[in-house]
Amino acid sequence: MKTRIRGADILTMNEKDEMVHGDLLIEDDRIVAVGRVEDGQVDREIDAQGKLILPGFIHLHVHLCQTLFRGRADDLTLLDWLRTRVWPLEAAHDEESIYLSALLGIGELLQSGTTTIVDMETVHYTDAAFRALLDSGIRALSGKVMMDFGDDVPPGLAESTDQSLQQSVDLLEKWHGQGGGRLRYAFAPRFVVSCTQSLLSQVRDLADEYGVYVHTHAAENKDEVLLVQQRHGLRNVTYLDSIGLANEGVILAHCVWLDEEEKGILAERGVHVAHCPSSNLKLASGIADVPDLLRRGVSVGLGADGAPCNNTLDMFHEMRLAALIHKPRYGATAMDARTVLRMATVEGARAVGLAHEIGSIEPGKKADLVILDLNRLHTFPSVEADPFSRVVYSATRSEVDMVFVDGNMLVERGHLVAMDEQHLLREADRAFRRLLRRTGEE
Image (cartoon, rainbow, N blue to C red; front, top):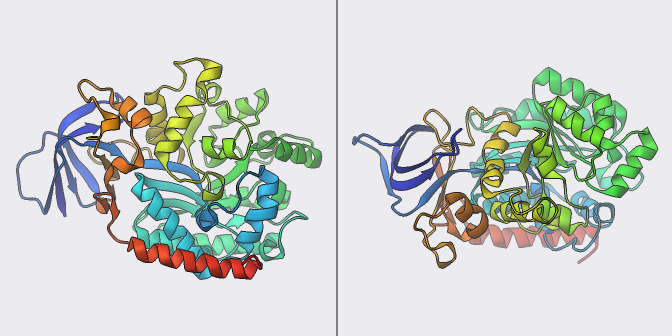
């Protein structure tokens, strides 16, 4: 299948961040040519005059299992948010509600230009989430959440160390590499507070054995840091490093409350950080010191976190906020638009180990693309406009015109190609009503 996209402005995000005006040729799942494309037979031709093509956004931290909980856990701090709202709701999930929650989140992500996600599910029914990932066409690194410790864990989420590990391995062996390599598995211990050292140590060994990632939370909240110190005598990142879980195969969400030693560990070990500014503000967790992490050479990308602590999965929202919140402390030139857009593309690709495949528009790479129609009042004037500024500071999800993953068009004129949106909305509401009945809330 050959597709030629004609007459676009192409923001490549290559090493030079080059902007090219011209055509883009896709053959099957790969980009073949950028800029000048020889005339020839193609199966599909798309007119993109006046539009901007970008690499698809890469979300480094999201919980698809929580999409149905949007608006049900507002105005709480992290630990109360988990214990009183999110954990009881996760415990009430069934297979159908997980599938629909995942689809609802994936549809939202695709419509806002995201093509790759790092997802953390809940304890049960992760098979259903992987089916949604497979059916939707999105690229994903995902895994079952692991939590074998904690007095406040609902019975529906309680699991033994052996159960958690065995179920995770079973899921890995079933789903890792599915969708032509589009889906990959990651071990997902929730955070140090809800995991035994035995589980975390065995996760380390299994991740090494299978060659897969570990995705967890760290240093999100002051109270969480205090609990870890009381239990282990070390702060989060220092503790993870002490048991061998600080390396290039680890993605840590948040990292808001770090000391100097922990920042040094992240830089030295090559640990990847998912910066989730909206979630950190809404849960009153704080502001991660991203400019300092970047100065030290730490790999930092962007994430939205889950719908009940955001309440949107929109990368445009995260990019704009990430660019703005650090300026009062570091000055107006901190976190410029180019840096932030690279975090959402190139640095995200680096974090998931796919910098050779995605994150920029170059011949030979995967055709994971988003086309923006910037012919809007709020993105003009366009004459000699800085494309980074237009995307990060002015554009919104409403400008997403088309989205491709592996060369497959998943969004066309802003609408999902392979999903019936109205049917999904109805089914999501129905599934959530049933979930609420199981919690006794309805």
